Image (cartoon, rainbow, N blue to C red):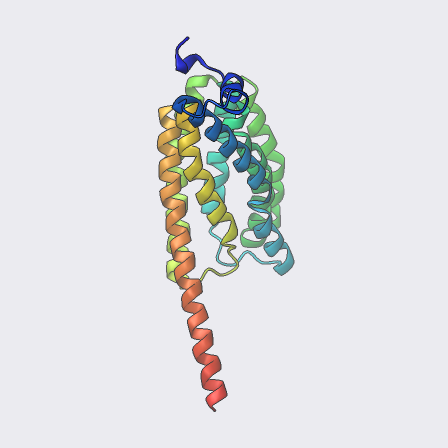
Length: 241
């Protein structure tokens, strides 16, 4: 039997029961599975801080609506694509969890940055769209193309959010926690996707998602540190006076 034919269960037995830690292929498979489990567990809390922050402040200031919608688009299409292609749940399970959270976040952002009516329309229409994409009604090749065009939509959304932060010279009501977690998730998914699906479009989109999310993380660190320095200087002046 070739190494590439070994299942995750067989690799588990080789590594943990037979203590065969010299099998590079199995080590990669086990690492991929452990990373996938970690990603899925972490995804439970990835967007919740942002949702709670908006709910508490009753404001979504500084959050770009197009960024949120493009994020939901790519999560929805990618999740439905993986589901229809019958990929292992471990390779995309976080998309289901993050998708649910992102649905609530989108409804809140639409409510405070657009209108209450727009939020309600979204809540009604979104489940219908998910059903059409995941039930088999939509051909697989169409899902593939939706995946392909999803990248520039998502990437543009990320760049718009980065531009909003740069333009405002502030992160506003935007929470940095989801972006740092998503940076870890997308970066890790490059490795797990190579190991578990080998789908080129998923590998490409994960790589570019990591880049664009990393850019926002850098801006977040820069403006937060700059804000901290300015506050310290202000406090020092007040103490001096």
